Length: 169
Image (cartoon, rainbow, N blue to C red):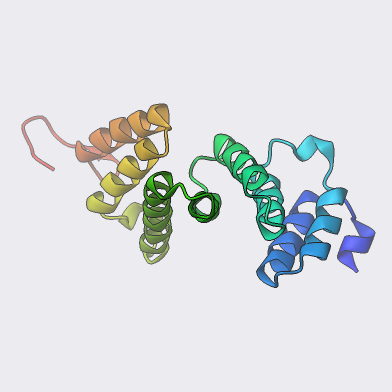
């Protein structure tokens, strides 16, 4: 009912695309993708679903291109990275698939580790260091550098209050 009322709403489309792809309904995914407004071309989720559609049809090269575009838009999307690894294996490029699969697994593990914390301020420094490495491995060096700088700043404060000179955090 909601999708009939708001047929081009990106969030509704993404939700129903996720449901349809999880159920393996290629016809529904294709139909929903046809409704995605052109203005959503910068949303990596729709490129991921396009990749899924190509992969489901056995169009591995096209799937690789779509997943590549999804990762250009959001290099931290471990779902696209995982699916790209599958396509690369299908293409016989296991050398390229292995690091993508490992990075996808690390992204999924980091998400779980962060969500298990009571709040974002409770994320242990070791997990933040893993996040920083994940970000850098995803090709987003500027973001990794900014996180590293913030982690350094946080080491010199205690609950948001700067440490006194000569004290250690």
